[in-house]
Image (cartoon, rainbow over the protein chains, first blue to last red):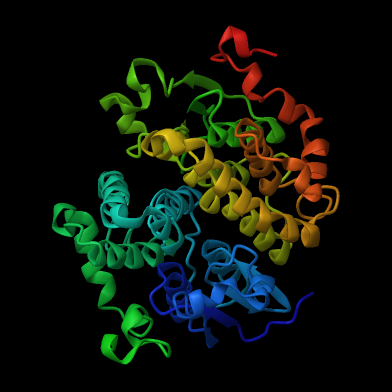
Length: 216
Length: 216
């Protein structure tokens, strides 16, 4: 059996997938070390041969923990949830677990991959419209879904992986000037969540690698 | 508590995400009904108001089961795995579970969303190169990852959700003329898997909605 070790998170302050992992660690009360990977500097530090060993997809985040290397934020979050104490991020009820995963995957497979840095770099001049298009399309689906599942949080009144995914995606939507007011349920949930300590301390404006002019 | 009902799968013969769900049902030995949703005919039957209620993302698959509506294939598969008997699709060991999810998410978030029908329709003349680019990029990462995790199957010697994701992605790669021979581990795993009954009976060439000229 693997021994539990302090996780090392290789991430970037503004990466929404890195932020998901930071929120999960904070909600679980887990201490971790951060190693910044600057996605812009030197043409992208995620492209080095050294980083490739951590995550062959050459994306952030990558996490070293318990003697293994993990990538894909939702896989990391669920591993941490299953092996560490603290509030669970997947509900006990199977239907609610399924709804949490459905919402998380809608964001993680249906929206984020289409507006991430790598794809946008390929889009050239059209990149803002492209990102807006896919975020709007995703939010049009997410809004009625959340209307059915939400209580105080995305699924009922227990905080979950779905909330961990929602807030960084809303942050991206705002960066790309999507009108979040058009989605009252998303907006309300986000407003509730961003007030929580675990979301505040992990915010892109407050990380070790946040540039001085973007610091809160 | 929800009663267990026979699942109804709304899918499309050639959709790789629909195929994932069909394989999972077959591996678990679960009977289900299929309702075909033709993604091409009538401008796309997934775009109707009626279908939108099943999956607001207007994509396949959508599954009605146990009184709820689920979308996002990996959420569906994990729900079925957690609520039904039969061989488990997520291993018992947390490290292996994490590796299964990492591989599944690499495919489901890192490759498939960038080469699905909706995105390709937006790419116009460049669509084949676009799809190839993202499949190759994903396979370049998947190959070294699988080299580390694979036994007889993607993660060790137990079949899992990762295998359920791999085979339909290789099928897509072949459709887009990606040279799968360049990825010996992927190729070998795929060859083993496609010989299994659960992968054969669920193949796109053998579904109720498979057009006559594409039938095996």
